[in-house]
Length: 185
Image 1 (cartoon, rainbow, N blue to C red):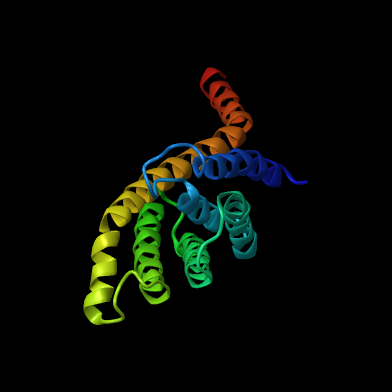
Image 2: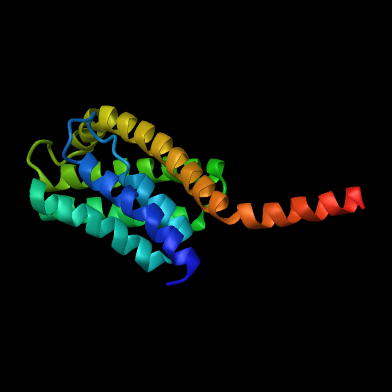
């Protein structure tokens, strides 16, 4: 295993554990780091590894929580695939990752509320019924938006600090020693 792979592994294992556990502890609905996991892993890993990591975290937790209507399950999992896509196309800076979090939350809201409207008998199958599904989903969207922005910024920043601090000490010391010799010689 390469040094980079070890660093990624040691960063993402606790993040996956946090995303998994966050689905079971009391929390504000839709505020979990699962979307941030998809975005940050999408940015830092291969696309397929990122998707496998995010969806397997979701799947194992769903096995314990319980599944729901198959169309809604497909919409939720498909939406989390989009988080990986947004992470992959984002630039490697916090602002771009936050924009990816906004894109993920918006797409999740639009896709999953449409699926709930289509799959359930809670809403009439009319334009007004669809608008009702979206209107009643707005509090969850707000929460997801807040959670995705905050967790994505936090995890993106921690990843940068984590990987940079592991790489900086030796080159920094060589640079300092070189400069000290230059000025004291």
